[in-house]
Image (cartoon, rainbow, N blue to C red; front, side, top):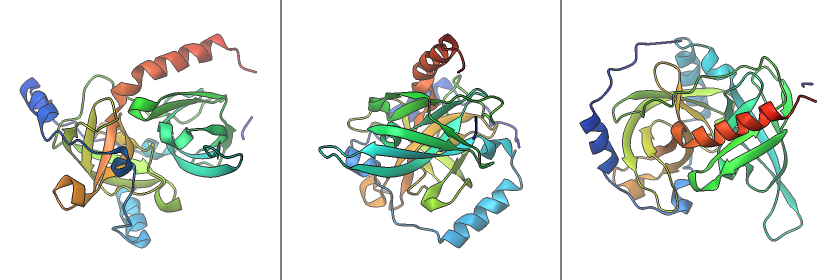
Length: 258
């Protein structure tokens, strides 16, 4: 049809997690959190840093991260537009996680893996209030990344993000979890990270140091709005996608391969 690992930091106490959730409840508009900043690093620096980081991580972190190309209708118009974002595959048979705003109003979409193979989306489902979506593919033996639903990352935990920012492919950056936030018009466990996030990173997986997905990038918090003077990435916990994923998995099992 077509078309590396370090020891995980010690678990933080329950008390620390409670403190993390009530720290700095920022109430911000959706227009702020889904807007991305002008580049802070040059393209050369971004690519160079990514290349250096990849030498010390498991290559599987990048093999399952995909480029999503979407043809969608413009609201209130008969014209269509093309947009793109990042996603990551969690099932060898084809199940890609991304943001709702990446696939919103989609008429059709194609998924490109790092090896160049392209798949058409079979069907998809979304949870707009958490800015999450799941796309089903018809594939076999596709590169897939592991997901950790068991625990939430805590402030101070080191993380890595793989995505397709600024029309680049498979760029790896690293940073740490900062704090949990409450965002107006958003539901779910949302946390900020100290890592360079740019246009095209929407739907990128946030990995812990065990190489498991713990969150999904959906936007940034601009420096002038967070009081810290620096732009921060925003991610929603992967636990918010668990029910969506389970439903999609059941649908895939119920429908025989064509």
